[in-house]
Length: 340
Ligand code: WQD
Image 1: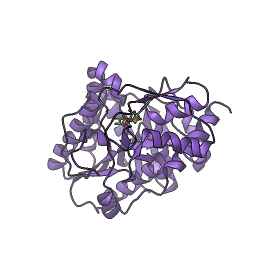
Image 2: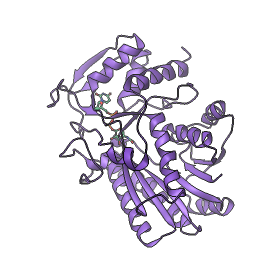
Image 3: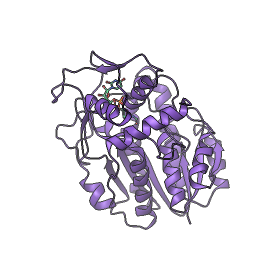
């Protein structure tokens, strides 16, 4: 079975995708620089699948290191590229860190793929490329808007680099997967979102508040033009998201792609408000969550949720897990991580 490189494979979405790849019989090699993950995630993956992926610690900014990797693993047939910095707020403060880490590394990998007889390339993109879409639900044809942050801009630029490369390199076939909001953890509670630093995202902040690590959740604004006044997002279970990566990879390896570069939105198609997420957490955990309404967060869009038709019809993939499933697994993971 094909050997697949997963960059950032010890990260949140990466580790869940490695599990699904191994479950489908792929040989997996992981590159991770451990800047936002831990080698112990390998144990979690092994506990689930019984197979330990090959792991190479490498900073993809090390061009010579990337070249050496592909010399050693010249039998790689596909790459799923997660490795990138992804904190929106940090990207505003440190734009050059984001352009260097997210763009130069992509170029180095694509230059190596050009040397292979053929390569399937899956790119971790984000619904953030749409900004505040004019029409909801959001289809893949929605205009890509001026990015709200350097992080979002690196995803837009990344997609353009891949598109331009595929145009003149028939041996590289690529798909950009535009994630909505990934949440939850594997049901085994062997892997999940590693809690490194103060969480910027909603769900880890909720579970850390419930476990007693955070005083209370700040809800960033309840004066938006939405039913309950809080922002709406499309929260997709990370296991559903991981499975979509394997389906997209297979599409390319089996030559079923219609274009050399394609994009797919990955979401549930359902929007949930911040307060609905809080209520889902309280429902599945039995915990009462402490929260307060505060001012809006700079850069937040009002509402985003996916039109899932293209992914459903073209990829033959759709989400199977619910927001309750995601909150239940996120809570189980939080309790495990804190030894509760
Ligand atoms: C969701 C909602 C907040 C925290 C970002 C990136 C996206 C992807 C996912 C990387 C918003 C509200 C949040 C809190 C709150 N990142 N919130 N209190 O901003 O939709 O998406 O993370 O791939 O690219 O843009 O996700 O979880 O930060 O926020 O009220 O403490 O929860 O205002 O409405 P977001 P989020």
